[in-house]
Image 1: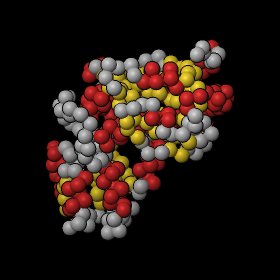
Image 2: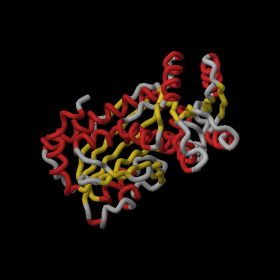
Image 3: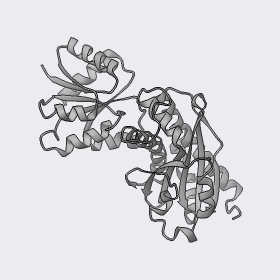
Image 4: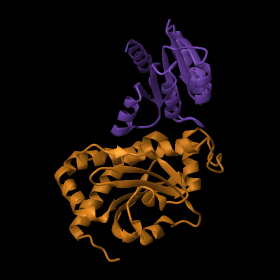
Length: 122
Length: 206
């Protein structure tokens, strides 16, 4: 089954998303911040990264910049989880960084699963 | 310096700023899940010396976060508030108790920039629609010196120029928090800006 890395500083959300996705049969790896995500990417190659945008230290965008600048990780699929209601220019900016989707929090479980499935098919 | 803006021009500019701020405030309100209030925009043409007075309305030095937009109506979008206000927003977005962050740090500065980019993003959306062109924008900057927002971004000979300043304020009453938003243009662009707004204002209706 596909491997999904979930990156979020909210522990409750990590537990929730992990449970939802594992129920669908996905293998889920978690990281609590951008630094931990980059560390774990040295060991694993997820099929999709679901990442929070607003994290302390390194934001989701900054973490993504690091992912894209490393030849070993630059092609990984990344979708954002975000509380932010993005402007059009904000959405374009994410698209230009290769973000395949942005899922707005709070999300509906079924919607999350459908968006993950769709992202994995892209 | 006395106003060089006609009454009609002032109404057009105020309405435009009001509409854009409403959209940005709604997005911010949904993002932090708090009610946002807006103030009546202020429009003026002033020298940098007078602009600097507006930059320091607080007892303590403000934090300024700005983006520079380059196009035929080159301008700066500047968000400014007391440090404690930006720290409160970082507390909210990073799920901390209010007062958790005592100062700017590597842990919170990126989020502060990001929330300013989010707000500025709605002003940029509107500018793209109004001025109907591609914008180049530079990396978001943060400083304790708001004057840099004008000086740094190459409005040449800033001390001999006047600026068209569109100023508005968003407030989150629950946290006794306010952020000032300035859109700063060269005053020589005023007529062109109004012309473009009149042509395209239907594109940014709320």
